[in-house]
Image 1 (cartoon, one colour):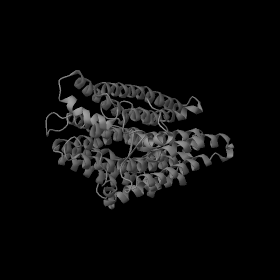
Image 2 (cartoon, rainbow, N blue to C red; image 1 turned 90 degrees about the vertical axis):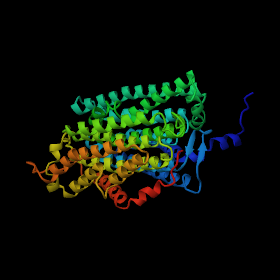
Image 3 (cartoon, one colour; image 1 turned 135 degrees about the vertical axis):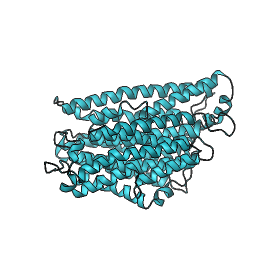
Image 4 (cartoon, rainbow, N blue to C red; image 1 turned 180 degrees about the vertical axis):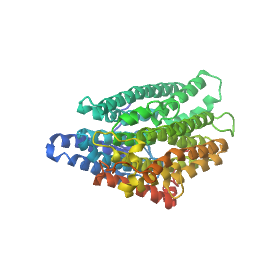
Length: 512
């Protein structure tokens, strides 16, 4: 018979203390909903300040919970794992959310869409990403993915709340609808894949799936068929979230139509959550899907092929883009391909930890660089939201030299030029691919990086070597936006010049 656990047993098994960073952020968000409800209109500026304060509380809790002395801990009856992997990515998510809030502060007022709910949704999405990176069970992955995604659907359509019939409002509404429909498809794939994996193994716990998968995959049975198809569907579901080819179709339109701070936020947060779950699932759960003893895991070839397609399409299509947000959207697809190179490398025995660490460093570098680039793009947009084409950045070096310098560094980092964080990330990713014996994949990664230099450097050429007929006056060069750009610039340069800082932060990460 089922025995009801005592309160002491429940607290011991749930170990809620290990989930404090995400739990406190959710609780603070609920408090923020009530506070914003009773704030008078003239004091609405306190909502983003309180949102940043909540991020600070979660950050401090993260430092306490994930200290090296604590080691690895499990919570929620083994469904959540608190380790160095979770702690590192929590920091990346919290910093990304802080930068996104700074970008949004004046943007919402300028667009006349300032609502306290915006910050509530952003914090909820961040909390979903934080639970996703610590997920140790397929159920938690799904619930956290929905907590991450549903607020983003609303945020993507946030400009439509003005309901003035403008093109921007209509594009934003279309953006949210497209993201919602394709997001629902990805969730369906994830649920169906989880059901098949559960049918094959009898469990949704990732470590237990690992212990059972080897024996099942080596047999000729329906369970082996269900396990392989289920694993493929799980990869498809997460592939939609991180925008890898051929599941990338939503990305350019959603990024272009969504408010610029939202596009920047989702380009980072959704990728971190999706890739974290993918690494947990493939490395910690399905690494036993081997073809034969000593061979790489069966999914490595598939992941490598998807990485190649993502790198080629993302970089080559970005060349033809004239709108900066669409260019950054295809750039985001390409960078998903670079992270996927590291994911593929984890499939080789003995390389999994090093490849995982390289993926984490790449996500850190991408977070700072991409958010900084979006912040500059947002700064040159006009009051009506237009002005995001590459021609609109022409002559920026003459009118705003410091902003042009920051954008140049962001473009160099996205290309992978030395002394930037982007170079460190790409170097580690390609090194892990070579270590895993994926020489062709590493070569394609390097060649597509050379291709990417064309459209990134085109931005620099327009800023410095071409004169604008107008004296460009960035519409949103406010103190909050400057803080966002400066934080992103500092992260890009510090982790590029002093690269041991990044490698030391992930040196203890292991999910094998």
